[in-house]
Length: 152
Image 1 (cartoon, rainbow, N blue to C red):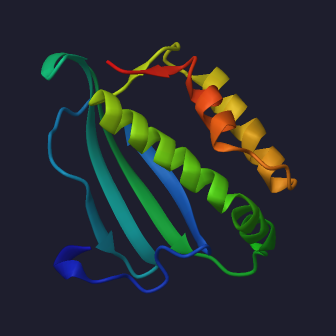
Image 2 (image 1 turned 180 degrees about the vertical axis):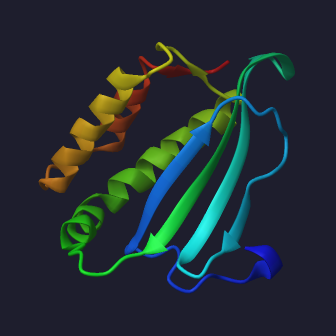
């Protein structure tokens, strides 16, 4: 937030979001966030690039967007809290595996089509198993990544 402050009611489970995107405005400015009377806004300007090593070869798309977060009432978030309680360790280990592979290989190469749905769907199947109490080992997570993620 500007000035390092926090918006009242922002970044809570009871904040709803809507996103508006336009993919034509080239920009390299950093994300910006600001408070509103209802919550907060997060403006983004991202470039998706093709790299060769450390060199940018080309820009695939310039993406700009605004996420609008507003506090809502009257919604029961219990199922989300239960899901997070049941799967937070799984998702922590998924983040750790990404971090390990990025550090080990000084980046990663994604070995799947742009949509990446096969890896994502397998990850969500594992997360649902964790949600149902099935133990997902670190080896299971590594096996999930192996076909889809390698060093650059």
